[in-house]
Length: 394
Ligand SMILES: Cc1ncc(COP(=O)(O)O)c(C=O)c1O
Image (cartoon, rainbow, N blue to C red; front, top):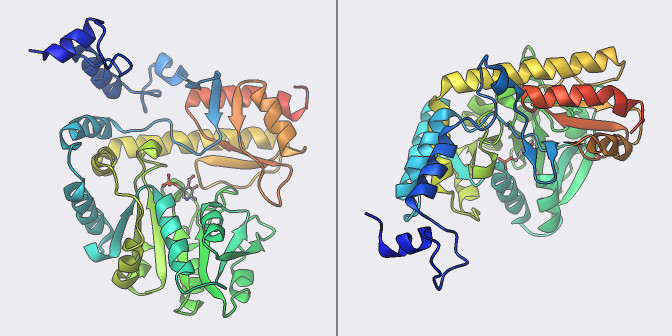
């Protein structure tokens, strides 16, 4: 039986809280049902209507600009999100601990070597704070262009960035990054695969680099897109944290797991470094995200199908760019970086006029754009608009 308050709100009766969201058994059930229905095309489904789905955002645009994964959350994660409601009144200590234990098992690390963050962005910020801690004058070495969160936060807390241009293959120039080390260097950022270029370093090259960096400098390897690599020799550096006390490897549930809005990421490091980072934590992770992350890790069918779809559509975009004779990198992420042959703002505007929001300007690549791999239908729309936008006939 509903309580009188719920009844009166459900019946539309005026109450002192009439601006509050109306909550009834019906809305609760509708909310639950919405979570259980596939949001984006049922991954792996052969049903044409499922494949056709394209998700328009307010303003009618299709968002292919933030490297999100439209297939998430996985079916198991959706159930876990619903079930987490009963835990919502409590702080999520138990869920944090359970996820740490699960990740430690999967990565064959000790629980003391895992740090959970509210997205890997929080862990990037924590690393910047750690670099700032000894006082003014510290430097961060990073490739340009790369994912800017770390550098932006480092700047805000007084750590300057020494930018090292990518090499001719649009990849990290590890030799130049090593040569740029000075007594002021406190942190080195390697995004592998790199956002926005999608290039990835081979594991052996990256391992040699990490081993050659002086032990007082932290090397942060950001593996947000590691689940989407298919190039030979590219692999996680996570096992190396057992041997290198200055290595920090970051992962996120925002990409292959499709949980960007639920803000869960994690770091792997030597227990001492992990402990120092934990002290700098700013937010306490949320229980829905933690439970969804745990469930998603076990939803192997979803992860396999998501990867298969994203890689197939990534290949379709790259093939279309080849046919149109546009240079592009061989992407190892859920996005493709390509030469639009015109100022990127012009190209992006041409796409926007067709309802597609892509990329944004990246340093040193004025004419290159980045498109996120969306659903099959969204990629179809992008591919239909691409030749027209490239001809500037917006
Ligand atoms: C390379 C890289 N690292 C980290 C992040 C941040 O992800 P999260 O949602 O876990 O904060 C992103 C987001 O796009 C990214 O591209």
